[in-house]
Length: 257
Image (cartoon, rainbow, N blue to C red; front, top):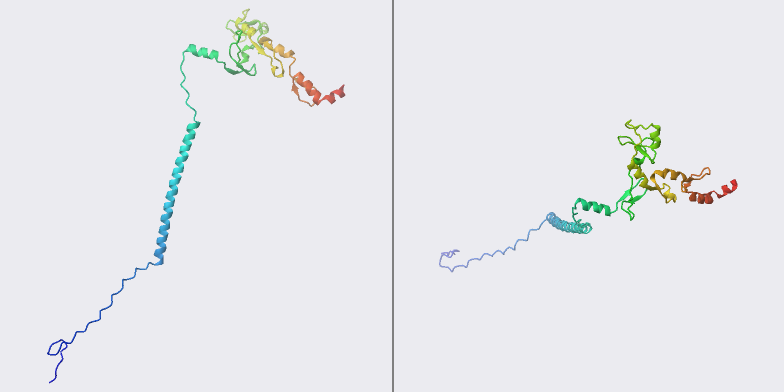
């Protein structure tokens, strides 16, 4: 009889050892995913943008601090340059203000004196004044300077003696008779008012009564002189004309002699 060998271990034969399956080797861990070059470049660009934004924020902070420091410096300069506030003026009564005005000299531009004059009392009681309109002392009819005597009509219009005679003692303003009424107030002003010569720029230092001013100007030795030679427009005092002729026209003067 044939013996059957049972591979499954059944039967009287010895059990055949089981085959061991070879164990599959353990698979290594998957390698990390490789990023493509585009993603790497994109990440680098994002990092650069973040760095630029941080730098811009730092620059803005620096500018803000610099602006604040400049504003503080300007405020300090303004505080230094700004003058201190004036103290409030005390309101005095009318008598005190009048007294201050009399004691403190004031400066005026006089058309007659041709230079600023001080309004203040002197030691002898005289007061230096300046006329803003010297025509108030002129005759309204002939526009010449009033001279003593000065006549007036019943309404107070004044006229010089020559105009009063020419108009037959009749006021040209209101046709009222002038008569022999004299304006003593204007006459006193004319007597006390003294002005300097109009040739003071050329050396005249005389103070003349206002009513005699034009008479003095006609015969003043410091009157304005012009060069007598043709083609010369020099003007000046007599002394200046003498020096001018010696320096500029000496040869011509000697030839004429």
